[in-house]
Image (cartoon, rainbow, N blue to C red; front, side, top):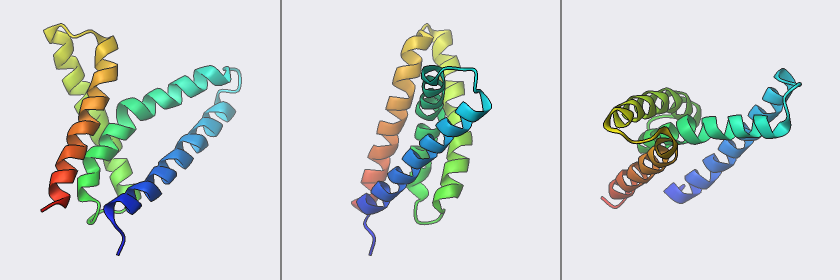
Length: 120
């Protein structure tokens, strides 16, 4: 039986491979840009949208395969971070703090919910 930690380690390796493939693809597509700009772009996309959405969708790890959770999670991450970030901006929270705090809080909250589910 595969434990939750083993599955998470395996899928973390898939996410790292996806980041590397994205960096290579962006470097080929945007060959005039420096590697630093491409790294910053890819890592910020993964930090802001992919990782929080993946963390939210990991709740359904037994029902959905990795690719389904990744795609649905990316869309959910874009929606959640966008809507919450917009509303926090209306309340006065700067976009600088929002870009750091929102993904961190989303991943932490999703991890807590998954942990509570696993101990039941």
